[in-house]
Image (tube, rainbow, N blue to C red; front, side):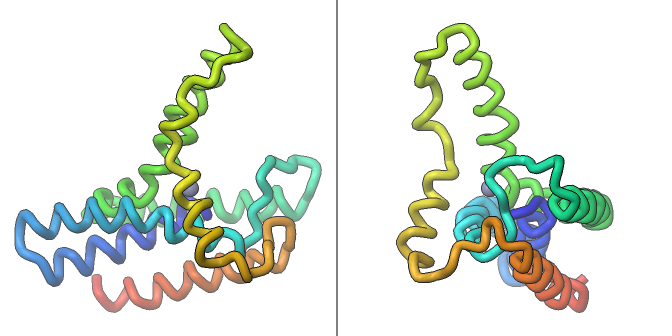
Length: 166
Ligand SMILES: [Zn+2]
């Protein structure tokens, strides 16, 4: 799913952990649950518009990604202090897989096209496994534009829970 959705889940987890646990357990559980939330949310991505590849020729794809980019930026800025811990940890799997491992892997592949480096260090296969175990019955909305409604619904549901708590 998108950064904004992961970030908001992280914010909600941090709020709840700080509400119900004392130091240092509030920090420990924020880190733990925010990190794990990524797999649950990414398993749900099957129900949202989520093309595996970038589609720069497709106006709908471009518009949706501009909307998501701008709102993600807004959410990160608004909730950065004091919720950066939950927000960042909820996105850690994407940071690790896409920003650290993938570029390193591409570099290795340039040097040696047969290189299989780093394959076992990716986190996303865990989300794929969880999705196949739990949502095998659900339709795949990856290319269905109507799938943005699921993501928008989840974002507003999260804001609905978060706003009264801050
Ligand atoms: Zn992810």
